[in-house]
Image (cartoon, rainbow, N blue to C red; front, side, top):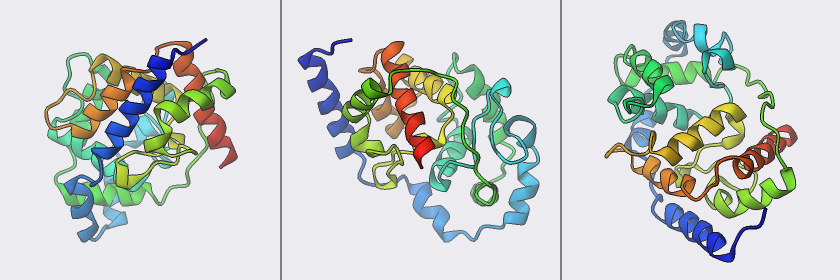
Length: 225
């Protein structure tokens, strides 16, 4: 597949704009560092998560629940907060997000979120199974043009740019979320400023083979880490 020069320029400019606008982490990321985590309380809270995400937070595809243990604490904190406050999971077409939103409501406050995230990070992260095939060589080129400037050359993420670690995310879940951003299912809430930036980038990514190639490349990087 050939990418026109104009398309390349759009990708690069979009990535630069997104990164330049995300120099500060969200307020909850600075607030939770002042809270002392209680992993025992977190373990108790995580009991309600096991049915979908598994005993070790490894994720279960049949339950549409992603791997949690491999993700960074700051990103887990943000997503749980977004679900709890209605920033995420309230769009009429976000079927699976709507299932997660009420679960986040069981976390009483910010301390509870900090506790459960701290417990999740005590679990041993497991490798994600590959379910999406693609051209890794092409995927690397596409990734570096559209994603690398924010998520890093090895897809390890960058908290200072509010960009999560992509290698921690199941390929099937990553595909769903990119498409959700592309369709406006994610990133459309008025308070989701970082999601809005990702929505812009996802809009320049072609659904189908191009996306499959990018995801296959990300999975290949995960295997090397």
